[in-house]
Length: 150
Image 1 (tube, one colour):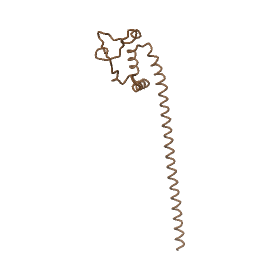
Image 2: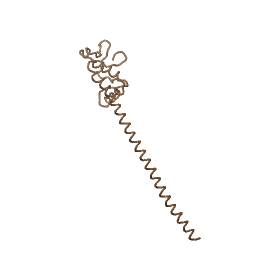
Image 3: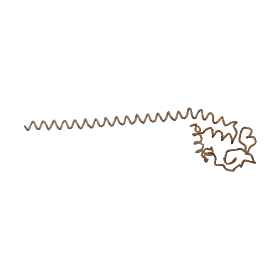
C-alpha cells in the first residue's frame, strides 16, 4: 500500500526488471492479504471472480485497469499474451456469437408464438363453423316443422 491508495506490488527484485511495481520499504507497506481492486471483485483468486473478471475484460469495460494491475503485480513481459487475444477473440468473436445465438433463439420463439396464434385462430374458426352448421341445421329443421304445422 502506497500512501492512501492500495495497489498491487511485487517483492521480487527480478520482477521489477520486467516492469512490475516494486514495494519500496520506506514508503510502501506490504500487506499479507490485500482484498484487491473493486472491493475484491476484480481478481483471479477463484473461479467465480475469475469468470466475472474475464467477462469484464471481454465486454471491454475497464479491461485496461485490470491489465495495469496485473502489470504492477507481475510485470509487463508476458501479460499481453493473455490480454490481447482475450480482447480480440473474446470481445469481437465470442460476444457476437452469443448475440447471434440469442437472436436465433428469440426468432425461434417468435415463430413458435406465431404458430400458436395461428393454431388458436384456426381452432376458433373451426369451432365457429361447427357451431354455425349446427345452428343452421336447427333453424332449417324448425322452419320445416313450422311449414308442416301450417
